[in-house]
Image (cartoon, rainbow, N blue to C red):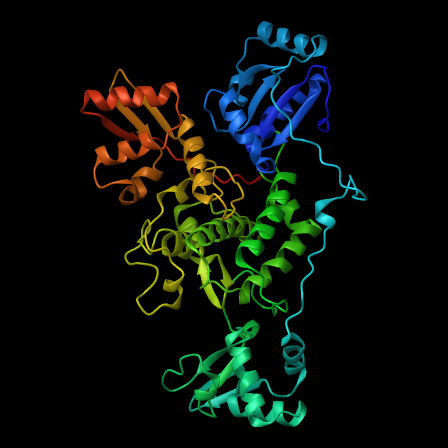
Length: 494
């Protein structure tokens, strides 16, 4: 692919996003022809999204492909072109110069001293060490942590309040007040968690009894994929950390996506040194602060984390192949975030759907006393269904979301999803609308009746012949809704 530069020579312009299978297919199809190709990532250049939408007749899916100034369409239209017509286009690009109405390219911004060929995988994550991190490291090496017996129960890798205070006073030279303050800091910053205490201490270390037991967060037994090590950084902003994680995992995903865009080599991805850096970065989620997040920050953070966690789960556990394996995967794969465990189901149905029951769930994810309920959105956000990627072939494509303009980004994701005939198809002759099963599984999010559901779909479609057809069918009344097959086969390379 050529770098962006001003030129009057012919070119093929492909507007794409990282990790997009259809984009990869289009580029693989064109690569052997030796044509000058400019690949523009719309996630990296959002300023071009509106111009591209206008040039492509209102479409927001990717890829969008142009031969010189001539709009072609997406990957399928490119591959289905008649050979004679296609050869004419190839000849045009090779022989005819660009005209003034050529599709736009990003402005090239010079970065003095920057390495043009820098590998993003080589970027090391750096952070400011938290003020209590060294103390925790010393505590791990001290003879304070051990097995405590209370009655008939053994509590491994634990310590009492009195043991911690004694160590702080003897080994760190603190008075009792200072030691209690440090204990409170360890609890508040989620370096440690309470294991056993009679009654509720409301998160106050000083209110705990002397024999109250605690554990370091990394020693608390759970199955979270980012557990087992201590997050030593000062807590990062949630939105910043989720974006870093999402960008790194998306780079990895794109790098290991097959040339035809149909599968991902998760085995090779797991052996990539960049995945180790991703895993180290994910540890920093343990002590992140969630309660201060706005609605927009909550949406962006948890959508990005969900999509990253799916890929992480595939790397650690493999792709689920049966209904039972899928159920286990989405209810088991988890991250430790802000001191609490969040599974994929917890993120989707507990946080992003406002604590609603999910598919095959008999109760809400969070009880009234569950601290995670404080993070949940007040109301379900239907648009998240077009942003979450579950790792199956029928899932929406993977993108990166930011708190700024998150609602606009989600509306664009919905428009792109509905443009695909595998997600929404209108048959005017039969007065039938065929939809993705997502609209069946989560119908309560879109409307209580079929009419409300179709009005929601119509409202969120981009201007297109399909939208005109749906309007016509709706105005005629008595519309039949059916649901399209859902391809659960994993996008992993076997």
